[in-house]
Image (cartoon, rainbow, N blue to C red; front, side):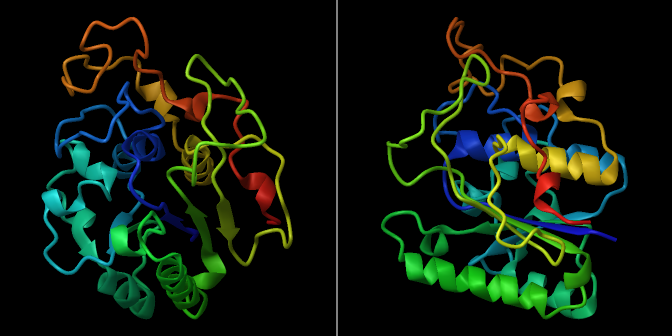
Length: 259
């Protein structure tokens, strides 16, 4: 059984929404509160097809609340999941599940600000935590059936010497580093394939034979969330874009593996 682990860094909400649902839903700011959003996410699809999943919140202790996850775990913005206990697991649960062989089929590991590498956090502290997380996986029984994706929700500045492709009306932003860590990953491989956050969704969907979010999400409720949704405000610019996991131009990371 394959295990999939995702490690996004902190705190850009529109990109984090894309990681969960393939779209930002027209949101362009970080001013979203918990439980407002109501379009389909990968968590909905996983549950519908009986694929187990959990969220481990690195740096947060037992009993984390929805307000504590705002700015870290964007799934807490969706009303279907804001009170789901799988969303609030502490870091210790990750090590417990590794030790006991109870890691779910898909895991999401979310960092809090002090270990996020986001200014003014200490980059060395964040990298040390990632080393700890990765080594724990590699030293567990889950390693031989795992793929870990380590990525960031935003770049480290406002410059890239390569212009972002114009994938759709929104285009793409600057590149962010992404690592694929697995016993099946191609060694020393640097991919030239076009990816964005929805590519991770495409990997999950292909691995487990799931429908794309693009095929399930035909429209947005323009009244939710009101203050950040361009369509809800009647703006002609920036309407909610459909999920990108249905776009053939985007890779699904399978090219990074030797199966």
